[in-house]
Length: 361
Image 1 (tube, rainbow, N blue to C red):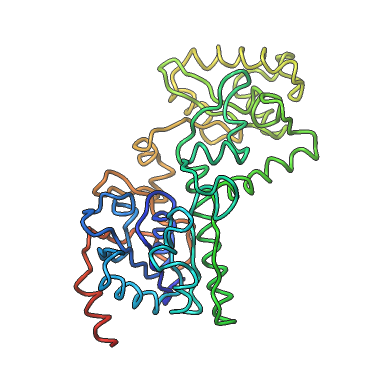
Image 2 (tube, rainbow, N blue to C red; image 1 turned 180 degrees about the vertical axis):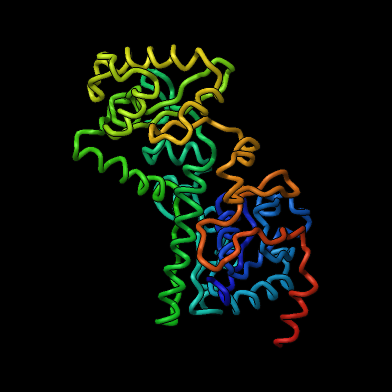
């Protein structure tokens, strides 16, 4: 779908390389500019984040390498960088510098705190960004500290994917106007924006700012349970018809203690009863009991187990790679093969990229 679009990715860590991988998955030509002498040790140099990309190592403080990078920028539709605000400007590669070379360039800036604001120059990580954005507030049962989630909610959900959206929107506009934009993709902004789904529950009385009292973070029917073998099962039968199916499968359809799904005062007691039930059998027993039903129950799998799960195998979602596993491109499109393209090794394409640029001059 993105054939003909060229993205220059200045190697970074986490969300920037992920955004570049996503664009490459969708057919864009992505050239990752790796740190000379780094041997691919920065996060952007590791598979599967380099798949589908071409790689060249440059020293951004070297005059000759800087000339070559500017030649690449002159032919690009978009650029990705993830330094703190002001770093690219000090290198002579800020938005104004680059858009003077290529006016239709969409300049994507990936940061945690954004390009301005009192925290813009502070260090931070995923957990810090989603904390300030409000997205970590509901991440554990009431009375317990919020859990540290995988580095997905902020870096990927609130960061990389919003950067991809911004780049694509900017490129669409630039094709009409000939003028690029600067995309300020701040993880705090994206994570806060994602909170709108939860905030919409407030209008129906299903969201409380008191943890453990909302429809998604407190009830017995929306949580995880420990099984007899130490495995875990997830339950989220929110709607009454799914809750009814859940009760019926567990033989609780005649148990009056579970009649009132929305009675917050009963949630602790109902949770304790379900915890006892699930603790009596191993995880895979419960997975089999609920298989094929609309009770909205699923086993919690390791990545390796997920890759072997029949549904995931049928869709070919995971594939083995040099690093162990990688997931194929998403979303999927008719007539488009989501099979991952080869990963780029450190500085793999220097010779061919230099030859291409030399041929154009």
